[in-house]
Image (cartoon, rainbow, N blue to C red; front, side):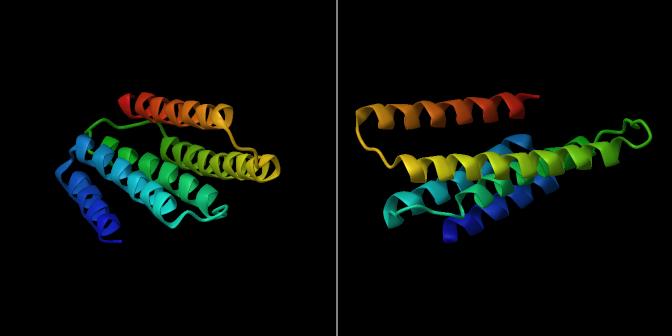
Amino acid sequence: MRSAGVAVLVLTAGLVLGWPRLVSFALVLLGGVYALYLGVDDPPLDVSAPAFAAGLLVAAELAYWSLDERAKVLGERGEALRRAAIVAALGVAALVLCSGLLALADVARTRGLAVDLLGAAAVVTVLLSLAAFTRR
């Protein structure tokens, strides 16, 4: 739990100082804390995982948006409203997609090397996607 507090402090520092690398580090730390919780606690199926994933995505989008707002460039009229709608839609889409994947995992309940490799490939895909989005 302390690590989550440290991650929130690092996120706050990154936003106040305007350092995107601190924001990235805080988001990775938050995800790592949750992954560690899942690894240590070993719940059978954590139904809060989709909400955590969607929350982390929305937090990342809002954090980087706040860093973008530091620029002295004026945007088009209605741009903030459009961007807020996109962030909200991404959060809802992440929640729906993750919930569907969780339901699929609950139905499948298979074990073995193939399932472990598929899970590892999914994790790598998510991490590469996050890296691609943070580079923008």
